Length: 293
Figure 1 (cartoon, one colour):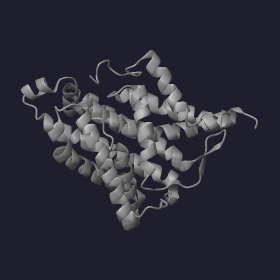
Figure 2 (figure 1 turned 120 degrees about the vertical axis):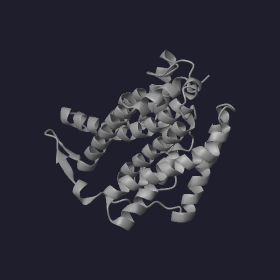
Figure 3 (figure 1 turned 90 degrees about the horizontal axis):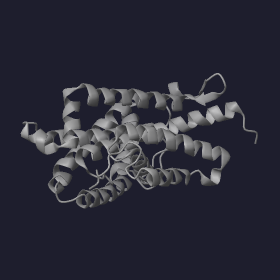
Figure 4 (figure 1 turned 60 degrees about the vertical axis):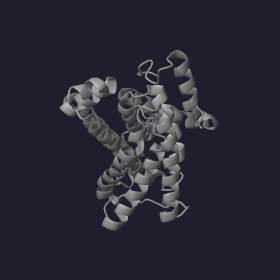
């Protein structure tokens, strides 16, 4: 197969669309870890649950746009309940306790979905207005994938403004560094933790809805993306939102290019990147040393 500039550019956009979903997954995971120091092993399950609730919302309302709003809100609320009644009692007992709890929670959520929706995968139709392809000048590219990239860019800008330009964001950043001092200053840190966990799981659910038209919906869809989410988070640096963005796009593009040049190594490429980064910077590209201690 002849490798042309148009083919490379098309594959680059494919990698950006794939990386955009990775970014959403890793941003939610990094947000939770950066503030709560909780390694959320149920993140992939929240991604999967978002896809199913989005599918249900789209079927009941007939609107993909409402599904994009309903799924993150519902899953975010479920995440807040999980943080308040399951995870919060384990704070201060070591990082292993919430990790094991969320690991078990993920299995419960997957089995619950299998009971409600069955074990077989379900299709998630792309909205009619986003079907087909859009000309990029050098090639036609699926309109829906361009939409995914646009949504992720808008969400990242909104999240950056929230964290960097609002009083709540100031509390989040301060709480991530020293929650004791923030509590002494009279801030209800537990309420901030609740909102942050709900936001992180809601972002995972949004990623699930956006990914569903591209890959369908199945109970196991969260398992593979959980691995990707952790790889992206480790490469970017645990708790770093900037790291999640850079690493997500990097891994998406590299994986897409590997499909073009060396298909057999496409799935391994992310682990090669992770190994290379950890050898040079054990804390990741943008991570802080000692955060896990």
